[in-house]
Image (cartoon, rainbow, N blue to C red; front, side):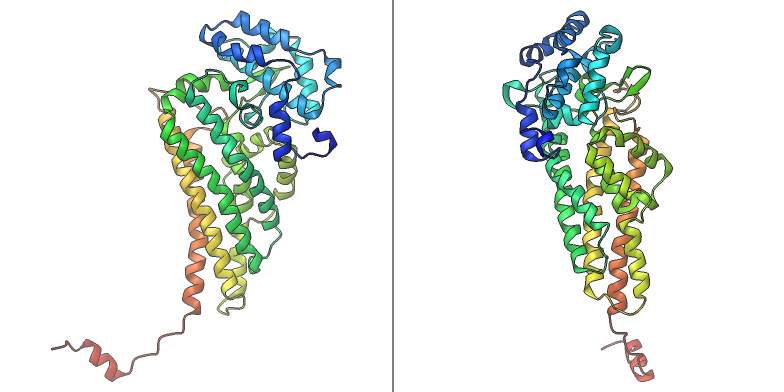
Length: 387
């Protein structure tokens, strides 16, 4: 069953439909791709890409899921050709109408993204890889592991934007979101344990370079295309961010799923969850009108932000190692951001986590009964040393 017949991008059945599809009969050439890359054989890579191209008219006979699988497989050769110093559209100009039509059919950019490379990639012997190194597999699996729960988390974010911070449902949603975001933390822990920053910087990163199609540049697959930035937009970025990060988000939006772009359009410019929480506390003043629900909501929101801070701290540590001057081949990540921006986002996330946590403490202090003023005799007794 294809997405045209009702499956939403990213649901388990749709993921399996794309993973199992091989509309270009690319299994054999994709298995040989690693050897071509080892040999830096641009001629063989270009010949293979040309051999895989369907007739543009045939694309209309493919389901949406098959179009996604076709873009996944062509993308492996696009990235490989560029890695060895050649623009793929110059080496194989007949790829341009095919990529354009596949992008139109799938409502995505006309090249592969991190979702094609990781999430829609088959498992087992059919897995598409540039190098075949076990570390590449771990990096792919880190995105595959985080994707389902983070995709669910975006639905929770959408409900959170419409929920009163003083409502009991607010805290429950924030805790559910924390569990979803926790998948990112699990993934980064696996990467830190098993993947060398030097391997990523010097071996794998070159395959994620941007390519040019008809004068327009398209970024390669990048971890930045995993939409944690959309969670940031809901929680704090929409009105408590900085221009550099907001511009990065706008650059990243086109590489996401169509539904993610719809969510972003609905969220952009609306008050963030942190701002609405602060306003709810200010409206309550010294009167505990919302009671424990405001405290629970603030505590749960602080928990989500704390989880994201931990993830971003570990991500920043990896990126700093991979992009240090003596190691790196490129000054910026494949998603277009530099390490400095990662650090700024980490600090801003930590700052907003502190805002939520401080509201919890503030409400606790305001709800405590005031201590009675001591009498002169009591003050004298307190100052008198004991025996």
